[in-house]
Image 1: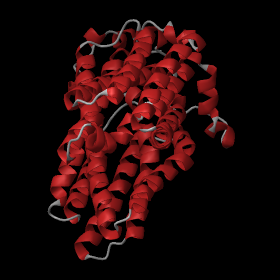
Image 2: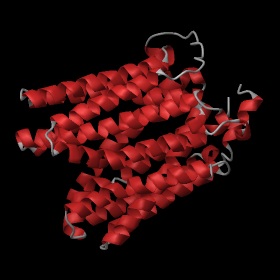
Image 3: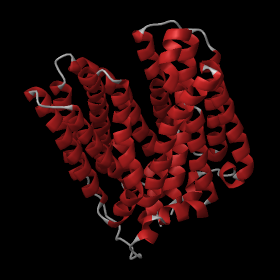
Length: 414
């Protein structure tokens, strides 16, 4: 149980003055920034070496496969070993892999297969890092401060999404070795900061080893209707609302803008998400959270439809900003709901399942958008995706009344 003194936000110091959270946040920012910088460099270099769109697709595949293959095992590891050690080890591995690309690019011996191997290594490490970071956060802050901490954590990711690609592109002007070297330094700095995090590590519960333990995260989610509803709602919203995958087509053929317009369109959801994250830290989501999650998904779907039908660049940017803001509300509520409902000794496995579902839906969402655009046309496919998101939200209200009725996070605290 959380001590009474911890439940009151008034008794808690500002989160950035709380050393464990401040170190966690900085480590997450640097790791996410390093990933974005290196991703831009990898894409440019692979295309420069091969001139092949297929090889660009392979970059995504070699990152995606480790996540699918290792996610459940990663959750099991996160619940049995010190999460701080896992995080800093993964970030150090990512730094080493990218440092090899920097060295190979500088020396001239890097080749496509070597890049794929490094990308796969980073993908495998992040398969362990991401659910472990999610499971680590609730142990660093009082339970009453978790929604605010989740919003600040989300703001870290959105900031990296906005700044990272631009920084990677600027650094690439000096050659691929430069962004790789900077990314490697950022990964190592994140690992160092993670090693400084101090908190009371909960004793690991004695559980059965083996396959049953690995899959127990899925069993737990199935036993919690509100958690299952939140994760599956977010999954289908991401799966159907994949408008961002078609942004190059919108920029060139519908909005008739250039590469600069595409850059603005790509950053617009992250701008909305960052703004909403900061707003939530100021005015936390503390009442009617279940209803607010459904409302956010409905707004997400509506914004997708508006974007789909827009032929104005300004209106499209506005729709994407609203889309990103609505998505953050859903994400923060889902993360907080899942973490507060899940016992600490299960958080790694449950976070791994959550990461697997959302990560898979991102990839499949892009695939679904491409297929439906090829079959029905770009605008109809995005309209159908937005309407499908709205329909799922309305159906989920009926299927998961427990989620709709969640009023306050306080009642979920363990």
